[in-house]
Length: 272
View 1 (cartoon, rainbow, N blue to C red):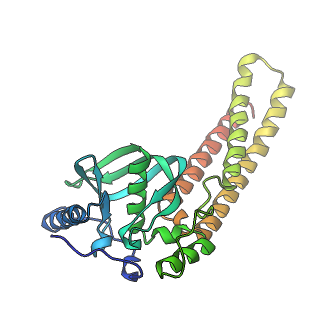
View 2 (view 1 turned 60 degrees about the vertical axis):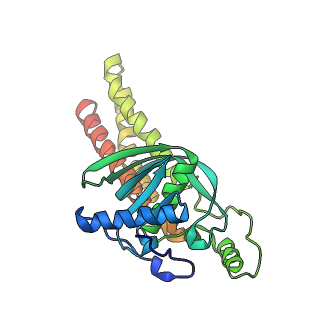
View 3 (view 1 turned 45 degrees about the vertical axis):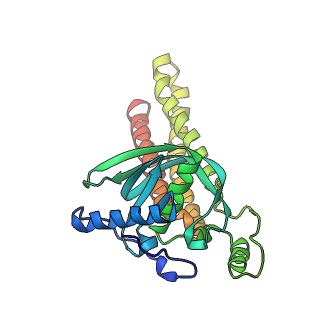
């Protein structure tokens, strides 16, 4: 069944959609309604939220096939680019926004089984990310800096032309990346110190390296804490940096924290 599309300024689109837990008749009807509405309006992607269903379900048109994603989550994203996008919610007014071309994601299929999927195509990636936003209480407007968003809103009200892109999105190169970069270098030299006994270096040299390991162990934790604090600052400043990306930030901290513990414990056993 074709359902009406939500249009700006309808605020009922601003919800955190709930996960899909049942894949029976209700799910089938919801999926068919999304696809029917896509065909009626010639859309390449659509979320359940855009037609009034508060569930984490979306459909992406890939060539002539309609691929269903329930409970989708982005795991990694690479290769940023500027995407020119249109969405029914904003009356198909074109907006330029920063997206990522390469995506790795997981989702539940129509049988409720978890699957993985990769995208390496600018158009498909833009369609996927734009539609995914609606499932997490985010629209294109939320991805823009306030000054640019105000101009877009004024344009929608017929008060001006749609503005050009003004570096309006969450930065793709963040200062928080420096924390991780330095931590990775410290961890690398901690690993190198474990190999020194194989080359018969003196006890004095090993002692110096062990002093470095103790310093690096503490420094890495300080950097990881700094990374996470700065990431939370960005998440508040740029709404789109929440949800899936917060999960990535936690992953960065956990993986490097675990490596830090293992390397220091090994250094203590081998050269301590």
